[in-house]
Length: 372
Picture 1: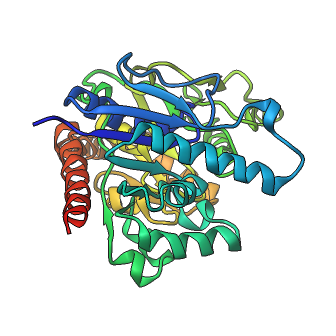
Picture 2: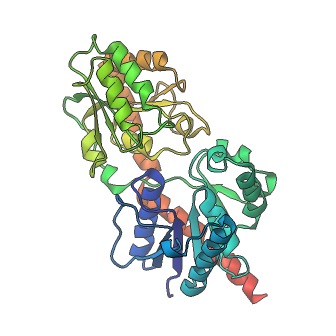
Picture 3: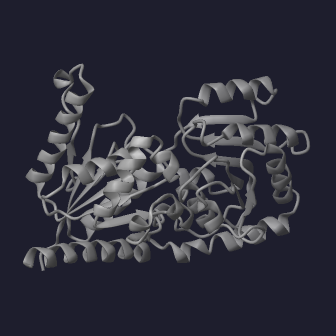
């Protein structure tokens, strides 16, 4: 049977958690023989690469056509995206994140193309304005599928959305499917993620500064780009830790960069289902994560068994939890061994097959409606 055509819509393929999930899905479906088109508003400077057979289409209107009227520009963007759906004629549209979900549903109306929208983070932040929340509450019931990341995110939506929503986890990137490191770990505490206010890396820096004298051989390394990188480096210098707190920017091989580290820390104020935490656990790193809304870390970590949950924005508690790991190798080894079991639950073949089955169901329902 001829495979279907799936279009995936996101702002860009800039290196981030949601973008990596979408690229992984695109590669999976392409490898399964589907036609895959990735629609992005623009091409970012630092993007994930995709196979040559995966088509790229850009939905942003040319700079020369952007006018002074916001309404006029919105209309042009609307028409441009709707034209893409009419031209490409995908059998299913998968949309990721906030405004993109709203636009995918609006621009595809009456084209008889099933649309699956996916909320990737804390819903209250993705739909931060009254207008966006209203749009989500009105339009999401019209979607053929709604994919959420955690049970906590369900409460944000009205019953009509919750009724059709499904929790589909992110599959592990194959690079993180490796044995737990068995040698002596590097004396390094690591974090990975965009260096912005929500990731709250200053919380880790303060906790590290408080225990730095007791662990003089350890360093803190935060991988990622973002607007706060220079500010955090400056604060590290002010704390007298310029040589022991590094922010080297993004890295092409995250798995290798953190593989031998002693501790991984996720310090976010809010998260959906954090890929970086999943990946660190899969590698067998002892992990500490904030117990933040909308509950993704708490769904991954059983506190004290396969990781440690810590209060958001509480660096004193984080310091104590870091000491629990650094000062007790037996405890650290227990966390490591139990964390790595997540590989079985989020095996790429298993999880990607669930996404495929879900998409097939959405497409089948649309076909049945057409025959009526």
